[in-house]
Amino acid sequence: MKRISIGSWAYTIGPYENCQVDFDTVCTKLVEFGFDGVELGGFPPHPNPDDTDQAGREEVVEKMKSWGLSFSGLAANLWGEELINTNDQTKYIDEFTKNCKFCNDLGINGIRVDAVQPPTIFDEVDDTTAFDRVTTTWRRCAEIAADHGLYMTWEFEPGFAFNKPSDITRVLDAIPNENFGVLYDTSHGHMCAVVGARQPGEAETLPGGQLELIDKLSGRINHIHLIDSDGKCHKDANGDDETSMHVPLGDPTGLVDFGPIVERLFAEDVGHDWWTIDLCFWPDAWGATEQCKKSIDNFVAQCV
Image (cartoon, rainbow, N blue to C red; front, side, top):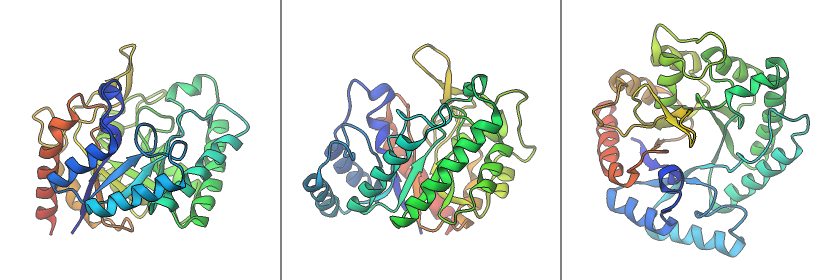
C-alpha cells in the first residue's frame, strides 16, 4: 500500500499568493479527504525554520498527531539562494543545514532541492562550471543530510537548469551518495522526456517517453509526485514559460498515460511508502484536491 500526501505549497503560492490558506485549515481539510499526510512547503505562512521557534515546532508535531497526519517531506526554501551563479555556496549550504535541523525537529525524513537558477543561466555560466558548482555543493549537502538521518531528493524540471534526460543521469553519476536521489514528478517527467521544454540548445526527448526515463533513473528515484500534464508550461508574471503546468489527476486536458507509469513507479523501491500529489500553480487547487485523492487511490488499487 501507499500513504498519500499533497504539497502544502499549492495553497500558498502562485494563484494563492494573495489568498494563502493557513496550515491548520489545509491539514483539517486533508483529514476530511482521507489523506495520510502533507508535504510541507517550508516557507510562510506555513511552518518554516525562520518563523517557527522550538516551542512552535513542538506544537506543530502535536497538532500533526492530533490530526492523525504525518509529513512526507520538506520542500526547503532555498530559492532565494545562489547556487550556479556564484563561486561561494556557503550561504546555500548554511540554509540547507538549517532546514535539515528543522526536519529533525518535525520528524520529517526527506528534504527536497532543485537547481535554483533557470536554464537561461547558461547564458552567463558555462555548463562545466555550472555542473561542478551544483554537484560539489550537493555532495556536501548529501553528507549533511546523512548526518541528520535524512535522504535528499532533487526535483528536476523545465524551470531549472539541468533538465535534459542526459543532464539528470550525469548529475546522479556525479553524486554517488546513497541518500541522494531524484524526485520523480510525472508532470516534469512528461515535459522533460516527451516535450523537451525549456532545454538549452537542441531539445532532447526519449523515444520511450516517461517509461524510458524511469528506466534510466531506476534505483535512484527516492521520492514521487503524481500529477498530470497538458504538455505546456506554467507562465510567469511576464507571460513567459516557467515550469511544468501541474494539471489535476482526472482533468480532461491531461496527456499522461498513467496506467503503465504508475505500475512502473509502484515497483520502484524508493525507500518509503509515500506518494505525493503536487498541484503547484493550479488556479483552483482546493477544488481539485478531492478528485486528485480519488484518482490516486484508484492508482494504488490498480497496483495492489
